[in-house]
Length: 201
Image 1: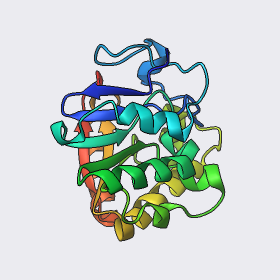
Image 2: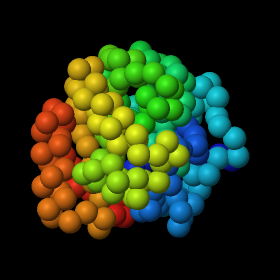
Image 3: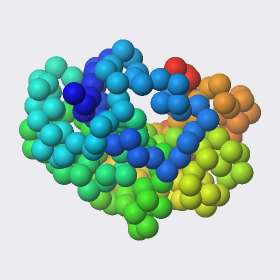
Image 4: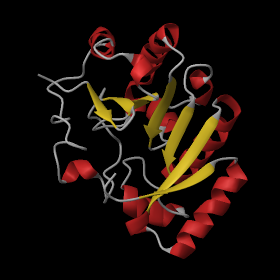
């Protein structure tokens, strides 16, 4: 039995894929099969859109604050399917939708992608992780190499035009106070909000 949806606090989380172009040094999936006591999040195969919708329908959306596209993989690897699921959610409920992403969708799809989120996604949370491309690549280890940092910043800037709430995150244990302050300035320049998140998330 695959874990397609799981509950974290007041949110329904959707585990669509295990694919990811990064191998972040702090990634939880390197050391664990699950998060917050969920069932294992490694998928036997990627669930179909129909299977994802059926799993969502097992929950009463009115009992939750948001639906989050975030599992053991980069959700924008399946961007078109993600948007189809988001459209279904919006047709059923006013519940907020969020994507937790590494911000590399444009590189994954080889085209600008932020505009596709308009009207379907309420919050995009993008992993900033570092303040320059060299440090970023050391931490994130993207298969796309050092172009990833600038691509992630551009995606973030683009998202501010189409998504109501754009957040960038850094992990407390892999960033110094000085780096966090630099990160805050990067966010301000892009029109995003910085969130410093604890490692265990």
